[in-house]
Length: 350
Image (tube, rainbow, N blue to C red; front, side, top):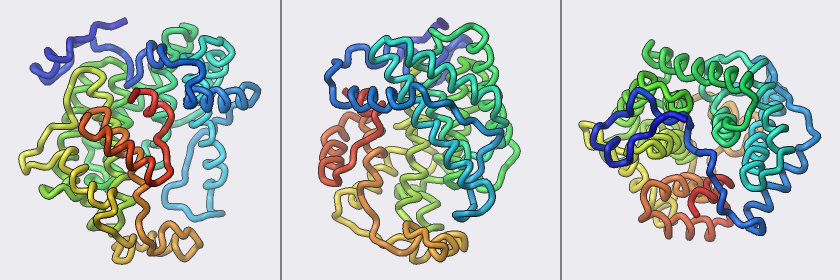
């Protein structure tokens, strides 16, 4: 296991040592103290049990971004993406129980995807690979050496590929696309433990906070899409990147750009919408034609409608992991909307 600086030292230095601990967010000890009868743990085991005999379904490339129902490989990709929720459930069940059936099935899924999938570096198509990164976190120490080597190469390719793409000035360089690029690049960089990749991810994160989040806390996508849906879709991946940094002793959540923008400021801007103090009708003035095309194709979530604060449950659940002041807010939001955060976030927040 690689050396990890103390949190205080890392924050003072603003960088990780040459040998950083090689996990994205969750260490091998995650959820070790969770009681077997914990309701979240029971739900996870139930999903994992249902997948113990299910074969993985990797395909060479996923593509749903910019597609309408029934077009291209959209439906094939959606089916393949079902593996993403399954693999994290299996990996969590392994850590919760120590039952090697879950470990072996997790390994089968990780091997399948790392062997077959060819990265497109389209961050919308590939954003769900964060679940495979987390599954790697939870199982890596117990996987066969050959699979660990294969996964190390896979995640290094993802980190370097997305960072290279960002350096090349890609399209949508200040939108939610870039936020998802940063999430994947950051998590994969920390997974490799490569200080050079981590430094590049840190710089990309800071650049995006300055470009995407305005001084008042609003994000570029809100003004372009006229939708709070795209606010959370922007902030969630940036929060995931910040959470990965936090797991290694760095505070990206509180970092401010030269204009004064920050993740903390964006969460504060969204807060009155989440409480219901303010309301918003989605997509009425979107500048993007594809939003209207999707609405016309029957995707009602892209037609004008009142924003559901339940959409922010995961957002504030992630925020409370870095800003304890949001703990009560996140809990009340989940209760009021009848929505619960993703399982591993709930366990990490215990």
